Image (cartoon, rainbow, N blue to C red; front, side, top):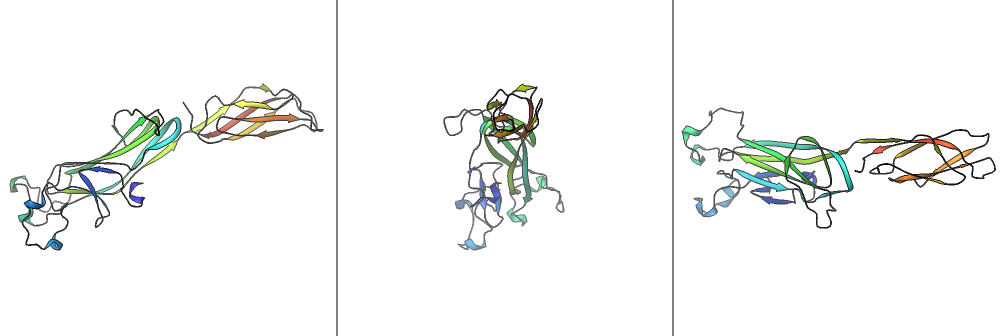
Length: 254
């Protein structure tokens, strides 16, 4: 959530900037300060970069990349709150010709837009990663280890700007379950390796068979890649028993 960072929206901008009065990202102005007719009363201006004549395109790249630690299929869901604003409220301030104006009383401003983009890499983001192309998304499953995000804002009306109040992405790992067939523990500790590693250590359940009265087992060293199980009899001596296991967690390393 880039809007909740301290300071907010601290990533790289091009044609967009954070305006504290609106507490959001807005498009830069297309005007230069030398082009503005002022009497020196700068306090009377709404903002030097937001008085109208806005640039048609701006981009903001999130302040940091996200490293999953390994390659996973991740569900990405965008988080957006945006709204249009017309800084030039007076007719004399408008840039467009009057024939190009929308209805004077129009309250359905549809001349601005914003889209969220993602690009991924299977490399270590801390090294020299090679990222793929930027792709627009709303809700998508994307594969990668490193993830980068950016927003692209546009305005087809030089008198209308956009405010991006909230901006972020919800990243969700899918449920991952592994189940085994019948295994023989042998008379000692048996190390299980999962077919596909989890994102974090999963919950592991073990079911033992052909067990005698007083037999028990211990499950230790549960990691995202496996665990250790050992069967013992009533005297604490390791014994060979058959068992199956079920591991339930999130994320399936690919």
